[in-house]
Amino acid sequence: MNNRPLVTIVTPVYNAEKYIRDCIESVLNQTYTNWEMILVDDCSTDHSISIIKEYLSVDNRIKLFENQKNSGPAVSRNLALSHARGQYITFLDSDDMILEDKLKKQVNFMIKNKLYFTHGNYSFCDDSGKIIKSILTSKDIDYKTLLKGNQFKIMTVMIDTKILKDHFFLEIKHEDYQFFLNILKRGFSSKVYSKDKDSLCRININTSVSSNKIKSAIWTWLIYYKYENLGLIKSIYYFIRYAINGIIKYKVK
Picture 1 (cartoon, rainbow, N blue to C red):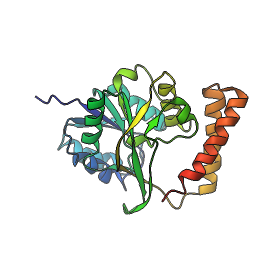
Picture 2 (tube, rainbow, N blue to C red; picture 1 turned 90 degrees about the vertical axis):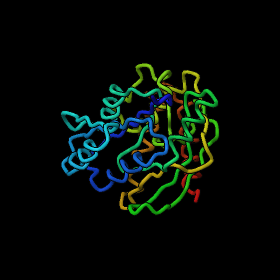
Picture 3 (spheres, one colour; picture 1 turned 60 degrees about the vertical axis):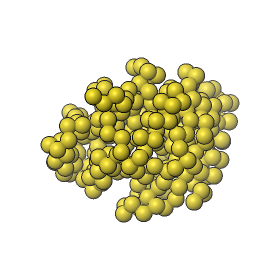
Picture 4 (tube, rainbow, N blue to C red; picture 1 turned 180 degrees about the horizontal axis):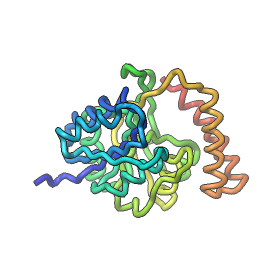
C-alpha cells in the first residue's frame, strides 16, 4: 500500500491536441507516483479527447470528464475539484509541463515543513519547449504580497485540501488570481518549495501582447475593486504596485 499522500492534478482542456501529449507525458514521467490526473474537456473541436482516451486505456490514474457545453477554465477546474480525491491539489494547464521531480520535491517540502500552500519558480518556453526566460518568485507570499501582483503561475502551486473547503473558481478572467487571493486572505501564506524551476509555461509569441496587457489590467482592477472590495484608494495603490511589478517581472531573463 502506498503511504505517500495522493496528489490530484487538475487539467482543463480545450483544443489542446498540439500539446496535450507533452502535458500528460510530463505527469507520467514523475518520480512521485501516487497521483491522479483529472482532465476536463471543454467541448474541444479537435482531437484532444481521442488523444486523452489513448492514455486512459494504459494508466488508470488518468481520468477524463467532459463539460456539457463550452464553459471556460473556471468551470472545468471546478468540475475536477469536485471529483478530486487527493490530500494535495495541484494544477497543470494542457499546454504546460512539469519536470520529473516536481511533485516529489513539492510534496516532501510540504510534509517536512507542515505547510498548507506552496509555490515554485518557473520558466517560459516556446512551442518547441525551448526556454525563453525564467521567473524567480518571492520565497514567502501572503495576502498583501499577492495583492501587489500575481507571482503564482498556477502549475507551480500545490494546496492541502484542508484549507480549500468549498472554495471554487469564479467564472471571471484572472480566476486563478482571485482564487488564490481568497485563500490567502483567510490568514494563510505560501512558501517557495525549491529554488529550481520545475514548471514550464508555454507562451504564444503570436498573441497580441498589447491587447492582452490591456485586458489583464482591466480584470486586475476589477478584482481589486469589485471582488476583493478594497475600496477606491487601496485599489489604486495595489493597481499601481501591480503595474510596477509587472514591468519588473517581465524584464527578468
